[in-house]
Length: 339
Ligand SMILES: *Cc1c(COP(=O)(O)O)cnc(C)c1O
Image (cartoon, rainbow, N blue to C red; front, side, top):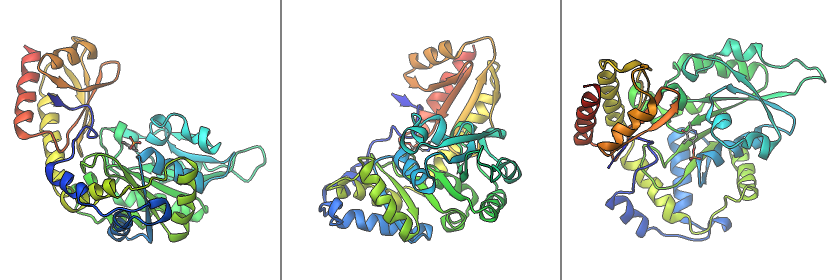
């Protein structure tokens, strides 16, 4: 089976499993798990933040951050396709009682000027704008990336208006292996950062929330209240440490393979357009010659699996378990479908 549905489908390698089996563990709710503590310290060091918190999912790290940065009745500014809003089950409202101000923006990217013009005035009629959220890379934008300078400008607007700023960096390392920039340069622009271990990094479970010591202390309490405090989680944290040690640089291969797919797709007669491929996500639209349902059915006949994103729209995501051999097979199948 060739699985292009998501980079979450990876299975832990033998080496990662060995690291998990041999982990030292303790009860992390008591702060006693040395492997969880080691993962949190390692990640904080890599991103240049004071502290980190290991959570079961990226939804939880994002939503814990939102809960801390806002009060009920406040408003968060983000793109209309932001994962925190579009793909997290209404959690912003459900868990934090916060409304959203949804911005437009090319391929999911929002701009400092647009953010600034949507900050509510100090007027009792209006919700209090307290948080700005950006996603990098942007999932629904086809793995699109922010120019570093535009993030600097967003951080400046937040600073000028005393707004908190959260980065959903589920796939931040897919961005960094392309640009050669350091995680610290990005993390310093934000009050909090979420990164996923269970995407391209190949761990079975887990995300990290990073910020100041005071922020992470509060996050620990909110994680508990959200039901995310885990006991001998060191077995999972060991996979995270392994992922950070071994699986970052190789994300470049995922990005390169995605670019190959994008290039081929652009040349096929039944493809209307392909969003620019910047990282490991390829989003494309089909011409009216074939529906996304028929297209995905034909791929399935070759045991290739992908997800529809909407009418005539399909997403491929490359990852650790998607090899060059699989890439060649997908390319063969795509060419056949056109015939
Ligand atoms: C996957 C993802 C998350 C977190 O998802 P979980 O499945 O809850 O771990 C957050 N943001 C983005 C952009 C994602 O792609």
